[in-house]
Image (cartoon, rainbow, N blue to C red; front, top):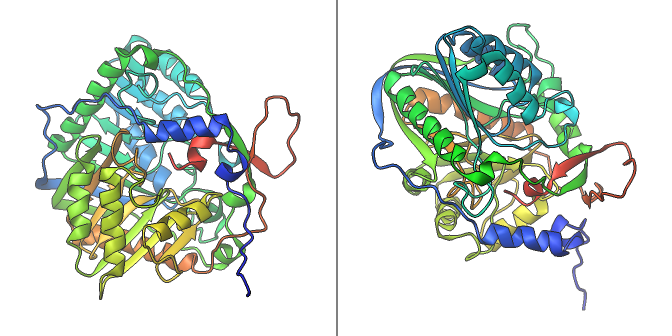
Length: 463
């Protein structure tokens, strides 16, 4: 009798199943979060006059963010996962330096190794030092509360939001690090070559001007700062995550991706009434996104850095309901459901988890993309979710993240076009079994061989 054999590169869990990874996996199962939803700041839907600039990176991220920072005069309020890009720090310093300008910042103390497009990035502490020198006592700051038994958020302060003068919001899937904010303007420069798409992250960004929504988001960020400052664990540097050596090939476009002609898209600018629902975790993400997917009638286009699907019963009740809704729609007659997630050493694990949940993982349904950092869902070409929510158990429940639902055909179609461009661009990308498996970084080792970069274990495990 012939027995089929599949030889695969060992996963992180396969190769490093010692106490360190066992502890990490235990922490994932026993998520802790002490955040309490405020009763006096309801996250209600708005249908009001507003200005919206829908855009993407690396196409138009920095050309939109830089003027936003230049418009700061009196108040800048920031909640950020990573804030290390030198050009963003420089622009922010210039914005908050004038007397009379107040700044609030909550930042996760990541301090991870810098490689590739982030090789010249600062540490988070260096960023805080520069902002403090610029604003002095006009800067109010706290490290995010993500460690210790009293922590507010389970694993990450993963939000990417800034509010200017209670008037304008910048919200994104990408942080203020160089990989998310390429310091280029390919549209202005008439550049249609592919290096930016090959090297920098794909992100979806929003600029939105509306006093009511901006005021609400600022209140949440200021509350985060006040509460984080009161938690002792948030005041000490975070314990560094274990790291792995990963071949840099995972961060470069494949030959098939590189063959596709680039098409950088200008922002979509709207000035009219727009219907929008703000989303935060741990507050209200699933309660709004779940019915959106369940009620889809034609299509669901899902693009996310992380899709941490495990076998049924292993995802937690809330995340399991989201996964089930997405994968049930995939099986529905007449529904066009397409899924893109990031190409990473854990790709085989992700696909295995999806199969265990009953998903069709063929390339007509699921594709993988180098440097995918988007966290978006387009429903029926009419509604779109834009923001920072990874589809992991912690990301959809107990981390701090922010997204917006736009019930607006123009905005939804703008991001749908971006999705379809990426979908076609990665049509032939698959699992490359020739790439070496990740290896744990050993404290005693010397120089690593060229072509390898350090990656925190949390990223490899889908946190």
